[in-house]
Image (cartoon, rainbow, N blue to C red):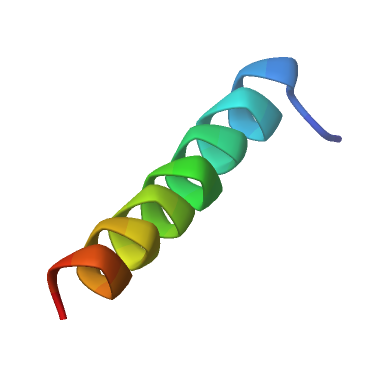
Length: 28
């Protein structure tokens, strides 16, 4: 079974990783 909370948490993790990559791209 897929929990809505799990999907939200995974989405937050993906967004966080994407944001970190963008920040690293600006700093480098």
